[in-house]
Image (cartoon, rainbow, N blue to C red; front, side, top):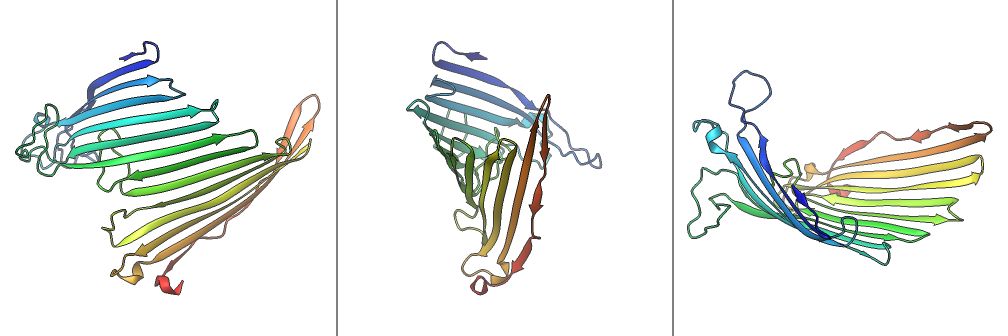
Length: 292
């Protein structure tokens, strides 16, 4: 259900999100699962594509009674709260968005409650943990220049029933500047990015991914458009101090493309495109980082 009086917005949703599947040895790849229920509410003010502020909450749990008590599968419970802020200024030339989710997750609701902590909805238990995930984005739009920037962080151990497949323990940053020159006859864009895991230094090694790329599109003539691009992706696994140096690995993947497009105008419009690409084979290296 959703209500939108003026710039206000109230949305409510709830119900069974998953049916119970009892344990069936030898019945195939589908594992057992509890019956799961989710309830969500969102309250906000503003325009959906403009300046706005939303506050969302999600509560979900596995119904313990949907499977026998003898099952080894752990029933879970989750309460998540998400504030969302968006600012659109100067006629849309500047956009800023920030979203942060705080999640309290219990991986085993059969554990004893924590004494002295009582809440009306969520029950903190032994093994309950609280983590967060967030994203900040900035956009600039001008006639000849644009920029998209994004920073994202997901804490190790972050879990939420609303996004069950979200990969935790990851931090990433992305920049995408672009230029439009010569009355948009020449377009240049860049892609810069980096991500890493092991945010708290609890792993034996840290995996870092880097991306550097760019594309150029030029209208050389009314009948000829030239597009070219280059991309470098680097994967580096660097061991933490005190770990085995043989854990070090690195891969560099290069890719280059050239795509001329011919346009013939007559009674009908015809396009002829040719794409040439070159991508060297990725080579993994395992050695001490001091020798690379």
